[in-house]
Image (tube, rainbow, N blue to C red; front, side, top):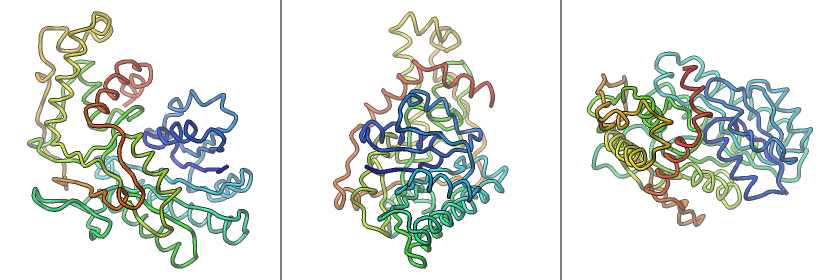
Length: 355
């Protein structure tokens, strides 16, 4: 039986990971530590409230004594570190919090793990898994090969620079102090519990509210997309099977231009509304209900500064060494995502209204 501390476990990917882990390993104990900043939503974990193996702790990874106390009290043997500021636009307008959380916060967590696991020797074996991003690798041209684990780091935003720094700190704590670490760098995730400022949930919720669909520049920025539960499954395999000190890229081999994603979401939501009186009544502001296609809401806006043109992940190492493979195709994953947002306005409407 494993005892996990999941940082940022009330955020999008963290919450999905916690749900996945407790469904897959119901006898394990999971402690979630989350500061509940704007993108952390404890309601994403409501269904786990009665689970005796789940504990939620409201706190910050910068609070090293708190982290140490949680690790000792619950005999934590595995840390899965999601906690991060992650929205590129916010990192441009206010980079300081990205430095504080992503770099100093990660270092605080590493210091706590070193103290509890190595200095105090509280468990027989341990693993510190660090969740990173493909954005640390920078930008790709249209014909460049996808990022691999040996691609040179070249971050282009304060967000990606802060994540790159945290990756290096994690590596350093293995080679300097012997902390047993692994890292995964993933492509863009999508799925349930995704904060509505990100592309896919933004487009879905804006369509349902009849609001403009902002598209940066020409909309031809390309991203590799991965269903969030497939990311959780990949992290599971890295923790269970990955070699200490190794980095594994987790991707879906699923590249889409942003404008094509927007057009797909418009078509799929129109299709669902067209076939359901109940949905049309519930989402009466949607364009289809008022005689227009959702694509009528598309508005091209000025591109953001330092906007990377293309990301793509080469997941061959995870495929070949861990046997990793996504379960969801993009067609099945995007259908599940749209249906989840249609069925859960109680979750996302308060977040839109508070933004």
